[in-house]
Amino acid sequence: MHERGPHRLFFALVPGESLSGRIAQVAARLVATAPGAGRRVDPARYHMTLRFLGGFRALERTLLEALRGAVQGLHAAPFSFKLDQAGSFRNRSIPWWLGCAEPPPPLAALQAALEDVLQGSGIRMPAVPSFVPHVTVVRDAACLLPTRAIEPLEWRAASLELIHSDASAAHAHARLSSWPLVS
Image (tube, rainbow, N blue to C red):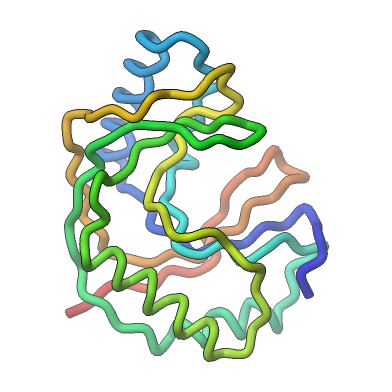
């Protein structure tokens, strides 16, 4: 099922418009003050991946239904957390990100609960590295961005989103499903 293909799926938190604007302002300051910045990510594509599901040659209705069914039973209350640091990852595209110095317990619990319901569903998924909550704001940087504190940005997590990234359309993102977080 996990062939490499132009259709990538993942579950994520997506910031609201106001928070996306504030994230974009921080990203602009980083690019202006840190040498070696790459290309900025479009704020419409900001998200925090909770679980990458893989790349697919086609989006099969049965897969999407299975994913939606697995997550139907997930219950988590809305919560707030802060993006309070910037940094980068060591990989071929050197992404710069905004993230959490300490992942808040409700965020870690939501990610773990999502992982549990997906593992219990029988849906095959690729192995992924440990969960590091972050929002990518720059791609293809020429150098690493040393981790640094930023003015905290408050994020109210109110829903979980199933996102489709389409490589054949410049990796445009489309929300396929949304589940509100409720108490």
